[in-house]
Image 1 (tube, protein in one colour):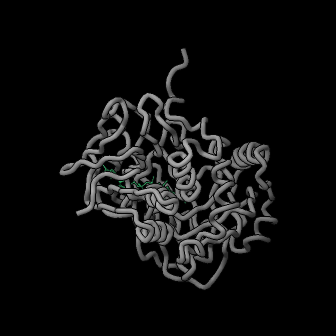
Image 2 (cartoon, helix red, strand yellow):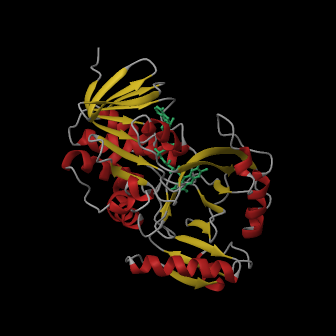
Image 3 (cartoon, helix red, strand yellow):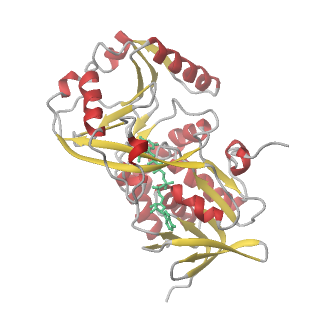
Amino acid sequence: MSSNVSEAVIIGGGIIGCATAYYLAKAGVSVTVLEKSQIGEGGSSRNGGGVRQSGRDPRELPIAMYGVEHLWPTLSEELGMDVEYYKKGNLRLAKTEAHIKILQGLTDSATKKGLEVRMINGEEVRQINPYLSKEVIGASWCPSDGHANPLLATLAFYKNARRLGARFITGEKVIRIKKIKGKARQVITEQNCYEGENIILAAGFDSNPIAGSIGIHIPMNRVLLEALVTEAQPKMFEQMLGTAEADFYGHQSTHGSFVFGGSSGIDAYTSDYDRPVTNSMTASCICRGIIRYFPELATAKIVRTWAGWVDEAADHVPVISFAEEIPGLILACGFSGHGFGISPAVGKLLSEMVLEGKPSIDLSALRYDRFKAKI
Ligand SMILES: Cc1cc2nc3c(=O)[nH]c(=O)nc-3n(C[C@H](O)[C@H](O)[C@H](O)COP(=O)(O)OP(=O)(O)OC[C@H]3O[C@@H](n4cnc5c(N)ncnc54)[C@H](O)[C@@H]3O)c2cc1C
């Protein structure tokens, strides 16, 4: 029988938990991952696959840039599985002068942090992607952004973490964390108790009640996002697309189908269910977006739609942080709908926090206590 004691216990088997387990197991650390449902059940297998640096808050941009420079390009090779990563750029589209203004602001702050991103006009946009309609009057263009396949990337981290000895227990819902002698030490599930020197909380929105069991509150909302996939189409383009208001995004996958996501604006009113479910209006709303941006796709058939929750932090950037008053606890949640693109880098940084006691990138702006009133 396996022991319930390991050096690290990870709560949540999404891509953050799986990537962290991989980097820890690779360094020889014994790891147990507790997942209440199945691996990748949360946003990690439901997302749009964007691996983007542009449009990021300056506080998390260094993580995104690190991942794109050092991890994503060799990830398929490292994990022995093609995660369908494309580093072919991101066009963040504008249809109005107000959109241009938003994108200009994001571009200015990103270039100050060293990211190569620039504003281009409508004609330049169509030189990069000739399928885009004349409604697009400009865009921000970041050539080193891209996309990957979230299901494959999550699975690849999971399989490799297991290969290196990490233990994954699915159907194991964590209820609370318990302190022993002032340190976070035990993780209590519905039926069992696990122990670890390091407890990493990466359970998406559900991190909140678990952190609450030990006196920590992270201001977060649960927000529903929807996406859809078309039938396979002839190869058209390889860039990732987004918009100034982040209300529409998409890319063409390796086998030809397009994955598009968007919002109808009514999602907040349908988010009271236990499971994320699509509503009757959002898919047609996304389709209207597709037709306006890509008239050529007007007859493409939609084969599947789905919904997923995101853990939206009050200031829209994640919490990746030790909790000093509770030694042994590391928080990794609040990824606010853009955690996939940074997941390899976050997994690596979390492993460094366990192994070396600090991450190699300064994460102090992502501390859990940044929301507290300053006295
Ligand atoms: C439709 C959609 C589109 C998106 N598009 C993008 C995109 O293009 N680019 C991008 O970067 N990001 C995108 N995201 C966001 C991205 O999916 C997430 O930020 C990322 O997957 C977060 O990973 P995670 O491991 O923290 O969370 P999750 O994948 O949600 O994993 C958390 C896990 O914890 C488990 N869990 C919860 N409670 C417990 C408990 N009590 N005990 C044990 N386990 C528990 C859950 O079952 C889940 O498996 C999108 C999200 C959605 C929904």
